[in-house]
Image 1 (cartoon, helix red, strand yellow):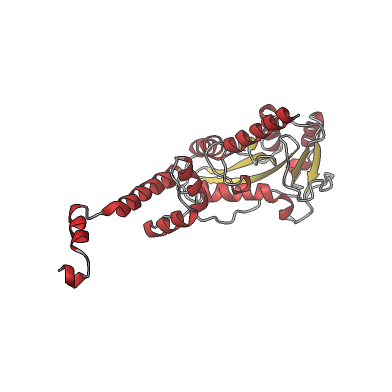
Image 2 (cartoon, helix red, strand yellow; image 1 turned 135 degrees about the vertical axis):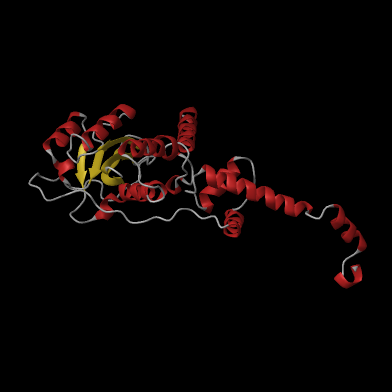
Length: 279
């Protein structure tokens, strides 16, 4: 048999003693780690982010290897879908110029943020989610869920939460589209009371608010499109869990170098300490 198979006797007996082999066991172990990381991320991470998750546990592995094993196991990140714009810019309120000018990066927190509103379908009708994202770490520092579209139910509660969660620098830019919720007198007055400069996208130009658009794209693909419709109360709880437990703590963000928000802040604090010590 050894002559027919063109293998040595020692290799044959070694196979008899350990048919799976070291490589086979390592492959199975890696498969288990990938599966564990994949389901811990609710299927929301692709190979780049899963690689980071696995490396964080002390396992040295490349993105190419993770991607290969994912294909073999039939694992893939959830696909994104389009979502509809829900805001209305047909109003008589004055609009502000675009101060942000698509400069979506900041070196410190509280310098600039973006905001937007989207709809969320439920068994009992629509809910509306408003978010305020700090451009420093892309974290939703303020958000609100409402069953109505007025500024007092959407934008203003989100701004107030953001002000409680993070100090803003005087003259911080607050960028949004030019919908009535952001242009209303109440919203303008609240922003002025915090010393915040208001900025609005150009008419019909969604790319001026690309960071907020990207957040909702992830939100819809990772949570809404993959879930069955639920009651408003259940949906609100799912949104809370997604933002506070997942997005702000566990999700890896490509913009942050595939770090979580918490890991990004750890690096930021270390860099501040380093600068202080050098000074």
